[in-house]
Length: 170
View 1: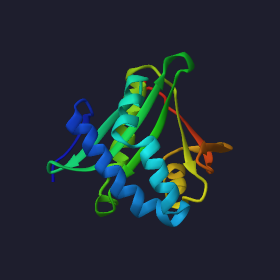
View 2 (view 1 turned 120 degrees about the horizontal axis):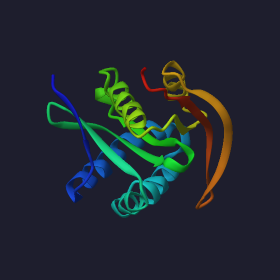
View 3 (view 1 turned 60 degrees about the horizontal axis):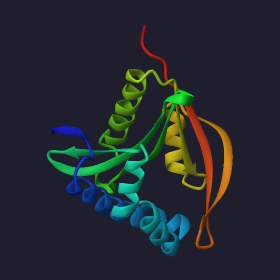
View 4 (view 1 turned 60 degrees about the vertical axis):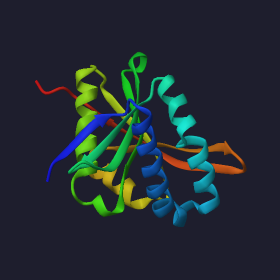
C-alpha cells in the first residue's frame, strides 16, 4: 500500500476536495446536524468557489491518497503573527478510516508547524461529534473553550476549541 499527501494546486485538485467533502460530510454529519445544514455548509464552505476564496486568503489544502486514490483531505490556516496554525478540517472517507490516514495528515501538519516555527495547533470540532473529539484528545489536543457561532441561514456551529502545543525536537 502506497500513500501520499499532496498540496491542492489545480482545478482538478479542488474538484477532488469538493467531491470528497460531499461524500464524507453527507455520510458523517447528516446524523449530527441534519441534511439541510450539511448541504448549506457544503455550499458555503466546501464548494469550488468557497475553496478558491479560502486559498486566496491563505488557507492551504492537501489531499491524501492511497494507491493513487484520494481518500482524505485537510485544510490548514497558518498564522505567523500568532505563532499558530488552525486545522480547519481533516476528513477521511469511511472506507479509509482506521488505516492511519488521519494520523498521517496530523503528523504532516505538525511537521509543517515545526518547519515554519509555529508552536500551537488549534481547531474547532462539533461538540456532539464524539469520535473525532476523542481522536483529537488521544493525539494530544485539549479543549480550551467552547463557541456557538451563527453561520447564517438559521444555522449554528456548536463547537469545542481544541489546542495542542507543537515543540520542535531538540
